[in-house]
Amino acid sequence: MGAISDFSYISKVLLEKIEDILSYDLLGDSDRALCDVLLLLQEEGALTEEVVPLVANLLSLPENSVWQSIASSPLLSLETHTVQICDGSLCALMAPCALISAAKHFVQQNDLSISVKKTMCLGECEYAPVVKGLKQTYGNVNAKSLCDLLQKEDKDAKE
Image (cartoon, rainbow, N blue to C red; front, side):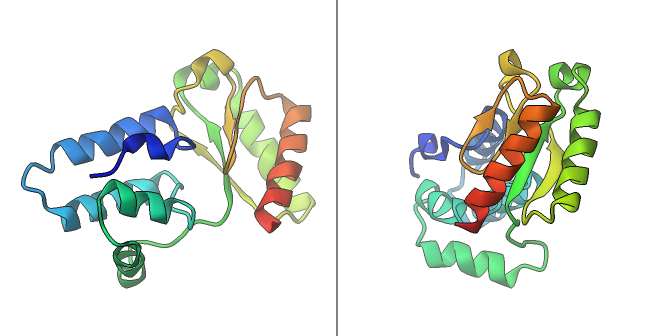
């Protein structure tokens, strides 16, 4: 199996869940592990084109096997560029509902090509409230910085 540190842009909590999946895969059933990891990534909105080579490396599988699994499963589909707003307990105390609502409104009003969703704890509580883009995690987000980072993420998604 590949190095889990290759997932540097995925939340610490999600990495722990992937490690759990790999640790209970005692029989070396890479098909089951692949399915479980892909479903987890799908549930968390992290199943993107960028993660496919990393999943292949992590499970020591050819990349085309990962693509075939995604294409052949009616349960899996690649996410659009999704900005995740942490809804963990500390972030929740700092009004993520208002951030989520404001972000969705801003995306729709400005016809941006990204989507916004709330997600479980991103494991960056010291920077709450936290927003995770494709390549960067933003801390201490407020309404003004949220609009700026959404525009940046939209620009990055189009490149």
